[in-house]
Image 1 (tube, rainbow, N blue to C red):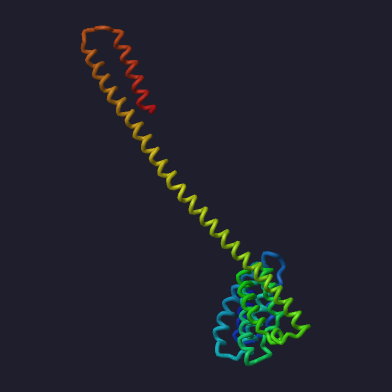
Image 2 (image 1 turned 45 degrees about the vertical axis):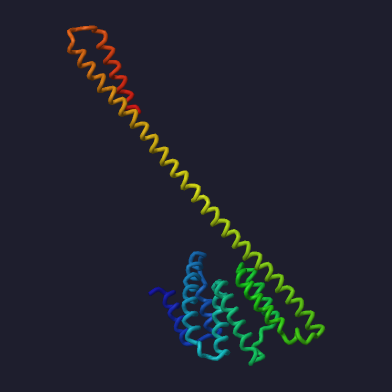
Length: 268
């Protein structure tokens, strides 16, 4: 077992032991220290796969735990994925944590997601190119913020700030929707062009096959005709040989003609 495998095994022990603390994060960070770029990329890839597998296993195992415990686990893996550069997993778990907090905030006011938190999440999703996630998060954020007590109360200072955030999230949502739609159109266009090209190639292939068959038939017809002429001429030559020396020049001409037909026969 290599040194890295031993370190990975120790990290697994820490995670299974529910050691979701700064010390475990620092140990994870130490594994990323590498002497060259190639080693760093390989280690980061291995850690990404490891964390994805472990996070799924751990999250399933804490289904019956309290909201506080679940949020601690989600926060740990958010930090871990951010450390190894897995933005997709990081955003996915951040979104899960925000939705969970918002859902439980009806009974625990301190869990309520602030407008700024929603805005930062949507900005990060758009910045990293996860437009579908950004669109979904924006819809959820706008729904939550419009039901916000500060928004309903109509306070002058807070209301202006909240309206500004809602306006920015709306803008980001529209931008994400445009990107998603554009991507869908591009995919559909590419599929259409691919299908059209395939459909056009089929008739061309059939026409080519037909032309090949017609050409082959024509060439075979010429060969059969030349063979028949050769046989007929050979019969004439044989009959001529049986004559008593009549027209000696005819024989040489027939031989030349026979050679000419043979040449045509095998050159077709």
